[in-house]
Image (cartoon, rainbow, N blue to C red; front, side, top):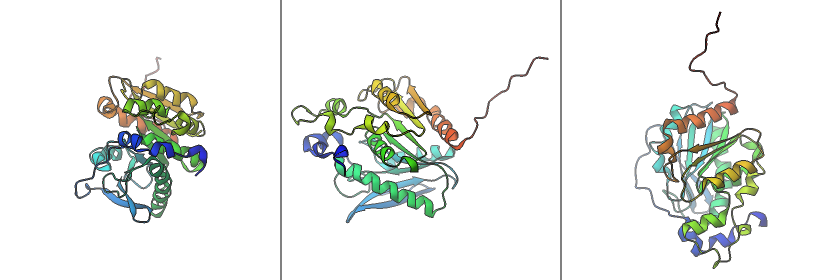
Length: 277
């Protein structure tokens, strides 16, 4: 991996213990209409994935969740995407859910590339022709932007929810002593540099009162993004973990309108004014 995107300093125990909060999934059958899938990222290590599939021609969203979540947390959320004609392909990290291994930043970022290619092949084998988007929430935004910077020609759009621009302020907020560990921005995720390389449609959703990632951080990503088609939606009254709850149905409508634009679909108007005679 290029030194520009190496993450060795973030793999220190003093970072990992604050950055990752893995938990296992309780054995359960996948909900109706979902597909459980294992993605082998290296010999003996598989990543658990749960795919909530809409129609074959509908947009497909590869989703990287937050650091305290697992894919089964989205069992009731995936169907809401499906109701809006969107497929949600949620994947875990090492040590999370049904996945093997132990999470590190280097493995998470490297695995994202393997996952990306495997999911692409899976969709192709299933003749799923809809647009392919990458979405990341919180720490998952780092995976989404890593892929955006690497595979622009293969991605139709990127969605960032509760994403961060700078690494050091986030780590400090989480309790990491970056000064003692000699961690600087040069050692971080470089999300600003990566989004600057992605000129395809981009959607940013952020909480007004995010206690971990101030809304200004999301605004920085928005400004740095060179895309001609980019949107920013701030959710009033929400904090880092209540974006979807506070936005309600509008959350999915925002995403649906974004994917409709990518597909070239026109929004239906609820009414039309009559011209005066």
